[in-house]
Image: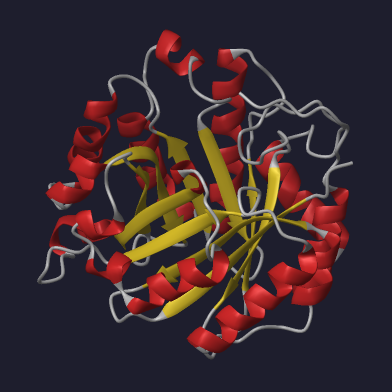
Length: 330
């Protein structure tokens, strides 16, 4: 478990969010309060695994084709305590508060996710990182996301739990060659909710072994080349995910058994670069994929610290670039 060594309030990150969205900082602080509770703006130490330094907040800017950026705030609602019962209570309170404001129609879906994918017994729950859950709220409109850790119990049972949760849609090769690390729900209603499964590739596998044609596409190969280049990084530095419509996950299969979308997130701390280089990489990605950027990106990346950079492709290979920022280390 990572522990923050320095005091960090996250106010700087919330100020960036306010500047980017045009909303007041007070409004953004209230949103953060729903995710993190009363301790949202207190100093550390924090005990989150969301970031490399233990801090509990990220700002995600999603760049798309011919569309305005989508801005989300991600948080670890149980990053302040080590007591397992308090963690569970804090997660539950944050989920309820966020659902009430952002996506009340997703209550049942989020409840099912937590019941099926988180351990019921206290002993297993205590072994999870913090409360075992992370929340995100859409600052650009309605919508939220709930993610839960699957890193508990027998590793071989993780994909079986996911199959039982969603239906038997998961490509056999993916389950055989990867380790499932988390699962989530994203959306604003049952009509648009997406189920997400996050994984890391095993030691002896490559993207070509996973049975995901999108993961082998020219778009993904170019992204990894642009971001990583010739550097050697640990396999754990890349987190992959698949997504599908939650209402009919089992029915949403492409002819080659590929789920609805694929995304790869690269850890920026494992590919350490100064902000100027990251800005050049983001600009190159925007030009490569025809994405609509915004003039604040340069300001944001210089003031924050890049945590991850991710490329997603939907069924039609429509790309999106996710820029994850955290507070600068003090």
